[in-house]
Length: 213
Length: 94
Image (cartoon, rainbow over all chains, first blue to last red; front, top):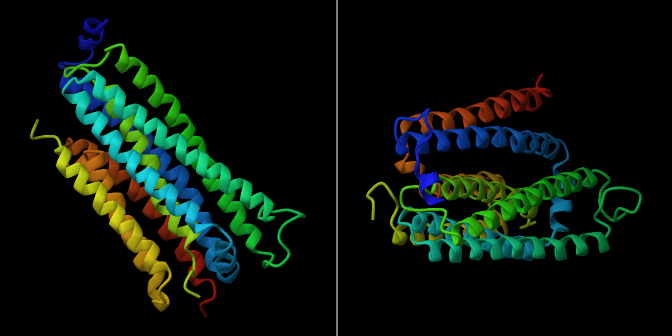
């Protein structure tokens, strides 16, 4: 099985070119994701410009503790993912599996914390609509639309990542990767790090608006 | 270790720097820096992003063609943000 994967596909001159093509393809996909989330960040920026006070009031009602814990979890998961890639490059199957599963565990922790946070948000009437917290300005509902949509889409990306990471761990366990063939692990890593990057911006823009006031 | 790879030590240092920057962002949000709060926080977030791209995503060691694709993605984002905000920010100008 390993031999089959080791063979360079006929359209490539060598393994290095094949790997470079895979990376380029993934980066092209990530560029489309940058614009996908970019549209949301742009819409957020426009409405924040118009309704800054309502956005600040809404942001203060988010729980920065949950957000901070999740940031630490996600940054750590990026580190474990980067280590999994390093071990994939030297063909250490057991260590690849170990660090991929650690990344999966941290990703699942992120979703669990998000779940607790969502529950608390619902109890505190922070879902836009007729039951929205009446003590907040009306336009804070716009802030919370962005909060739910952006964190929700990000959580969907995490969920997809967990599926792909699990598949990679399964394949690594069956010794499908080697020092010569490990592009799938690297490509999965690129996706996971991108999801981390999105959170690096979601965190300050959703949780930390005007906290000092 | 292949010289085209970041060492495990470098990855660990990157992780620690990212965490330190993260708590700097958190702390600065509770300080009154007047108009400077948001620019400061966003600048730190951009630096965090660059560190993740360069070392965790290993772009520092990748082909120049890949750099071109990455820069193109962010360039289009910059166009979208700049042109749109150029409109909204100047609507009240007389």
